[in-house]
Image 1 (cartoon, rainbow, N blue to C red):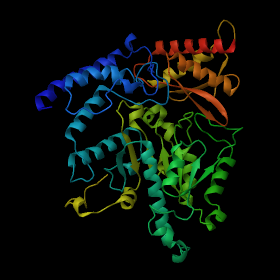
Image 2: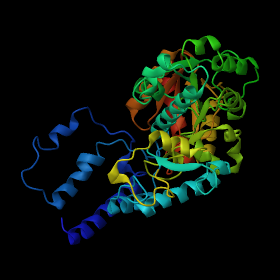
Image 3: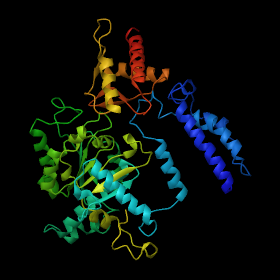
Image 4: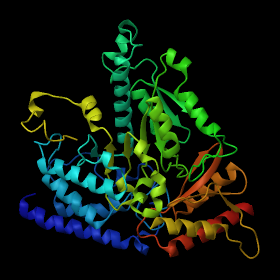
Length: 474
């Protein structure tokens, strides 16, 4: 493909993307899930790669039958599964520019404008969501903002930086004995620091067990709340003082410490995947600060809502955080992947991850840094619980609606709700997923698409009630 063919074919592809978006709310793509079975693609493509390049016309003709027709339409107005992944025309334009420039920004020298634009944009965003000035690149202090690919990546970076800081503190402590700890301190990123612990909340997402295996650390599951009294609330407010006493006990357990179980990080989740629960930074942060434990705030989904003043309460106490992250590609109309992360002390993270081969050095390295949903969710909950013809609704909310997520279930057994999800997804007109917390199975209705309107929510409720009624009458 030469430059003129690129100009012509590129415009054709942009038209295809625009047409696809415009057709998502039409009969062309009636359902968010494709009607395909595993292995469907084998009959649509050759068994072997072609000996000669195929023409653009032939490739272009394959896009709809091979790619679009067999794909899940994440931005379909009836897609209510998972959490949203954002997309916009402006985001697509940014992707075209980024891909077209094709630079790699691993140092300032390798891509000056890329590096400085990242610093400026993360400052803009930090100010917009209300992060204290200590997290800004432009602040005289050591604060740093950068962009990761996902919240999982950011959590791993925080875990490694927190553990490395704990290693450094241990080396400087009076309790440090070379013979006892030497084998663990030679390479803190490759070997365990004893049985060092990361303290994690009960509702933390699924990536942490995987990470703890990668860094050879231990993980201690802290049940911070009495399930019967508090459970996993949409906005976590613990009124039982035992909640905090329990955390203090775990973080300062001298028997654990004497056995080499050294807590080094607490992950505070703002908007869990299961129920959009929010753990209190304001209450948990001071405990960790007193005990010298790193606080990482994972606001993967809920962080975007901090742009609205009415949701500022979600991050109350964020000044106690050592690192903070959210996925801009979830609810901010920014295409995947864009997961900004901030450190209160960027010098720590840079020091622990720094590499210095000759080919990466440059003359500036000492001075340059190298690094609508809510209202529709409420409407869905109201319609679902509304009495019909004088009959009390068969549905209940598992937790109160929060941001763009409603967690609901049929009153009855887990098996009944599993059957409801299976029937809904077999019907195919809407797409949902389920979750399970404290042994209770429930369905998640997440507003994911910018094309979703009250009409789609109304239709979804009608369909859910219709299928539920059939199940209950069997």
